[in-house]
Amino acid sequence: MSRDFAPAAGVVVLKHMDGDYHVLCLITPDGKYDLTKGIIDPGETPFEAAIRETREEASITELEFPFGKVSHSYDACEMFVALTEQEPEITVNPHSGIWEHKGYVWLPILEAVNSGKIKKFLQPAIMFAFDLVRPKP
Image 1: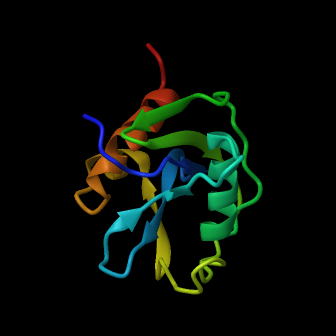
Image 2: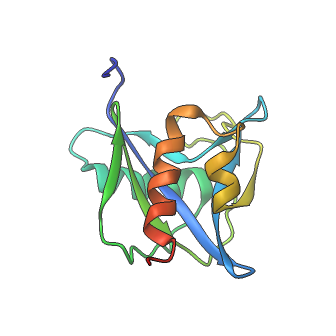
């Protein structure tokens, strides 16, 4: 099912803590959880936009892509999966001047997969990340 959304890209940011992978969830003003993502600017690749949005929304600049530049697409949003050791810093949107997020939380990946607080259209991207990091039989 395709909708009329502007092309967007982002990163499911993971951090290994306490023996498990945790997902960076940005807290929206209404208390929902979001991931770093945004509109792809003219002349930008989805990967470049994903990196930029992660820097702009969470101030994270140190990302590793041990799974390669594989991505998950849903509607017009392409999500990559990366690891970091950095802690995010939530700042004002550099383009609009507004606070899009009021904080963040690191959720254990399985909890994130099952969380009702994460925007529904982002759930498949978290499941994609879970499939990449879970031990293979």
